[in-house]
Length: 211
View: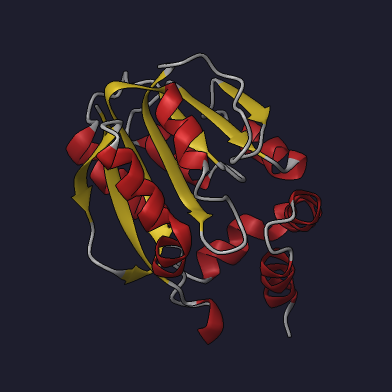
């Protein structure tokens, strides 16, 4: 097993435990970008494409939820978005994200807990590679909905497994409640095509509009 495979195994073995996830990602932070690049990390490009379709104004105030080392923020910054904030549970990841100069502000916060932002703070919320088994719980959509402005969009990668395990039901509940509407959805794709076979998880990008 390579070091990269060991890091990924540790992350999924944490099974959603915040302390274990934090330790795993802190330990991986230094190699994360190169590892993801080698495995053909597709999520940031998919999100960027759908941001261009649904939130094309580069002045949009964006929250990168679970920003990690800032791979997605850096991608959006190159496209002209320059009002991006990020949150993540790993200080090690946030340190690297901060070094890239593409975020206005970075905070250590955990998806699934109460977020330290005012209601309707953001015009768009993006999240790449976080909504997958053993990571952010589907309940995080409630807080993300709260801090999203009416008319704003969430652009989220959600693995098919996570969708079946709770995200699909959470989205349906928020749509029924009149909080969100379904705006768009990509076709299925593999987020990490170069990863070990067990980690080649099918995903979609879901675009949800705040009502």
